[in-house]
Structure formats: C-alpha cells, structure tokens
Image (cartoon, rainbow, N blue to C red):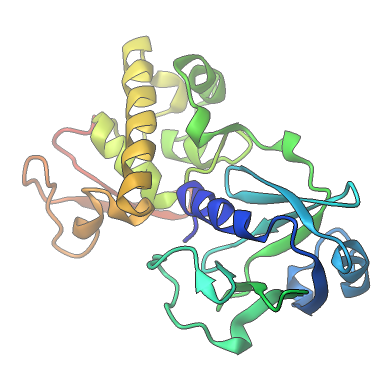
Length: 260
C-alpha cells in the first residue's frame, strides 16, 4: 500500500508535470470524489490551468494549481501514480504491476500530449479540493523526540494504533510501523503512554533512521522484517518464531523475545 515513502516518490515524480498546461480531465471515478464535489468541479478547477507546486503531508499528495486552488490526491491501498505513462514506483505491496486502463480512477491530459493518472484496482483513493492539512499530524519525515512525545501523549491506546493514527503521525502505515517497532524492540501492543523517556528516544531514532533507509532502498516494503511476514516467519534478529495477531484491525508481526 502507498505509505508516506511511496507518496514522497509520487511527489518527486509529479514535479515533471509542473507548469504544463492541463488540456483535459479525461477520467474521474465517482467513488474518488469527496465533499460533494462533481466531475464538473474537477474539470473547472484544472482544465486550462497548470500545477505550480507539489507538496505532501503524510500520505496526502498536494498539488497547487495556477488559479490559487489546490487538489489533494489520496491513494488508498492500491493506488499508483503514473506520469506520462510511467509509474513512480516499481513495486507496491498488495497492488498490481499491471496498468489496466479500467483501473484508471483519475486521469488528465496535458497540452503537450503527456498524461497524469492514478491506477487503482480497489478504488479506495480520493480526490479533494482544497484539503485541510491541519487535521493531519506531524509528517513522518519531520519526526523529532519532542514531536513524537506529543503525538503519543497520554493515550492508553496500543502504540501501533497511535503511530498509525494519521492525525498524530502522518505517513506511517502497517509495514513501516511493524518494521520500526521491531527495530526499536518495543511490543506493538504496549500502551502508547507506557513508554519511558529512553524508549521514546529510541523509538524516535528508529522512525527517523528507518524512513531514511527505506526511502533509499525503494519503499516501505524493503525493511528487514518484510520477508519474514508470513506463516513460519522467524525474527531476523534472533531467530524466534514471529507472532501474528491484529492491532487496531491491522495484521501485525512482532518478536516475542526482544520486543517487550
């Protein structure tokens, strides 16, 4: 699924579309529309204009339009961004590598003949006009010890659920969170408010380092734990059989020996 790292790749890819005149909005899937907006609203917003700036907060891609409006793109579980027919990433966990035209949920054509599209088999993404980014928490690339401590707060929720709450930390998904907690030697089921100051420091360090390393490696699926997420999987650190369970409805893997 696209986590914050993948959406950062999308942001970098969409830089190639800046200042290119949008000639036609070809496709907008009805399920992608939010806040009562229609296809006509999207066409009026984009056609004849251009993208001037590409930003991101967590998993939300933000495109500023030349008419002083903005559009927000969300990618759900399986959405891939293609610019001029080329995907920004080679592998997206839980999605397909095929570019089936029937999966195009949003597509537009530039006056130079180029294209931008979202290819999404499961139709779980969204398009928003002038999205409110203030409802999102600190971005995963901007984590500090102080901001993490604030995000955890006094919550007694499971730590994994708190980290994946996009209003607290924007951009962490299932794979990244399991990898980070495995590296941090912290049990995902621990209450968020149970961490000591030293544990918070360790967790912040591993969020920063994991996001940095996996961005260089190619995505949230490139962590050391990933290959062992399955039946009979063993902890790559100490060889202990991994535990599999759900936290907040999300499949979770952790080591019962060193994650305490």
